[in-house]
Length: 124
Image (cartoon, rainbow, N blue to C red; front, side, top):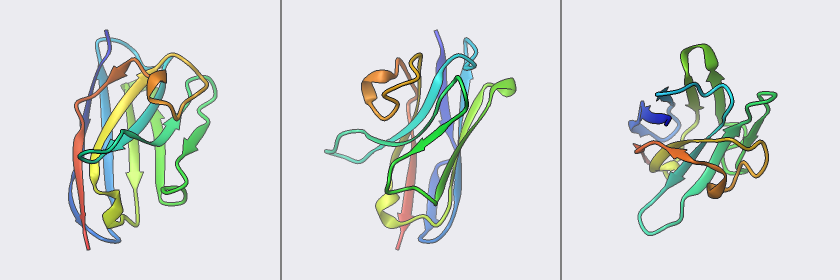
């Protein structure tokens, strides 16, 4: 049973940066594809970025391409999301997820383990 815990959220001005970290415990993430999703009240959970387990290939939502970077550090069982040039529309709760597949990485159903989320607020 892998447990995921996000950290690094907070309040930042538009154009600023934040780095989110997802720490895994109870098992290694080495064989899991990892992703970040975000959600605002009343909306469905939205894909942000993913990194697969086999090659380390990364995938991004169009809305964050060129601004966000996902990375994984298997030796310390963490995944990070570097967020630059933040915009007010990036405001959301951000969730880390782990799944065993290497396809369908933008789909919520691909992932079996989820963190509890960290809040990101971007002021204009």
